[in-house]
Image (cartoon, rainbow, N blue to C red; front, side, top):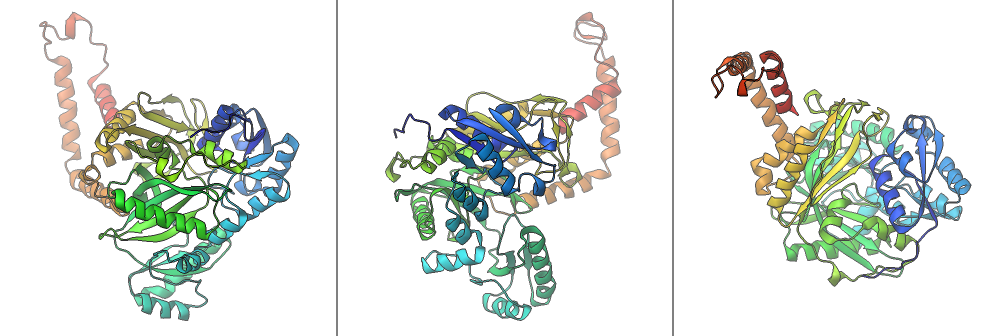
Length: 515
């Protein structure tokens, strides 16, 4: 798997922020490429700005006036002398107009062609293309619905329950579950309205609901010389509000034969799109292990580190080299999966308050480390988390020879992780890793909702006993502080008891339990 020692580019502008911008800047440094960061007014002190060789302001906090301004990004690339732009994920990463603007300006876009983006960016055009390519997909409409009458007709053919989905986007935006015909008109109007707000495109389509599926995706990679390969799969079934929060590779449900079949279908999808660079083909898997094409993400995925761990490949390095015209330095038979990797997305959000964003200053930060542990982070102690963007702070990944060992390693790493000053969802992952269904690999897209509902029910049942439990805890703490120690005194080793009052001690114990 030899690669050219020559840097693929002289200077790369990273058109993003946060942990992914830091990740790309690190890859640039390793490849001997100068890096250029851009930042909004609120991100002036962000970590990616500190890590880059150069940094340029591009506007106010609002993404529409900064990170989503194609003209400003192209202007900075020209001023800085960047010969390539890496979009990361989110923002303009799947925007065909941005990729085309880069090409028109003579700047290499590190990603697929704008034509491939346009084809796969529309869910309906992608379904039509996949239908022609013989790719299995969930029954539904192959094109957008023009009227509510057409929606009723298609729904009657597909059958209830079904999903209404936005043709131009994902992430749960413009998505509605419809269980009966009487619910269709209201859901149709709501889905169209949300799709218009989110994507400036109100087109929606119908897809048959697969009850409680798994979400499994395949990483593909293509060069500009005709090579297109699959790099294993990722299990992404643990989701909240249609957003992934825990990912792993390989999937607990996929064996070698199923991996080969899914991989070959994913490559067929890529070839139908004329795809180059990194991309991900997403599938829904039903209880019989039949899989159906869902969509293609024409960019690097948030969860790419789990694939890097099990394949030993650096996907960002490969992205840059392929974008520079190099061939993929390996064949399909060279791709081997080794061990197991699990990733959790660390967000600045409050699990006890409906996961609302929790911006603010990070007053204390302790990061985990050790063998097989990776933390892709965009934060540092003293940094103020802004409210203006997605609250993703970092990604914690653990790798080990087996799934059980990887989960144990991740749980250990979580025990070392501390973010003070704001609320995070770290406690959520500890609960997930200890859940019997997770341990057994019994995953589905409804897993997390059921787990949280169970916790809420348990909390409600315990509410009446909460006061008694607190009184008992305080009484136990008082007893411990006044009972004779082993040496016959009221304090261990005869030293003064400097642990503070029982009330404070109990509060500290409660705080530790709630971390």
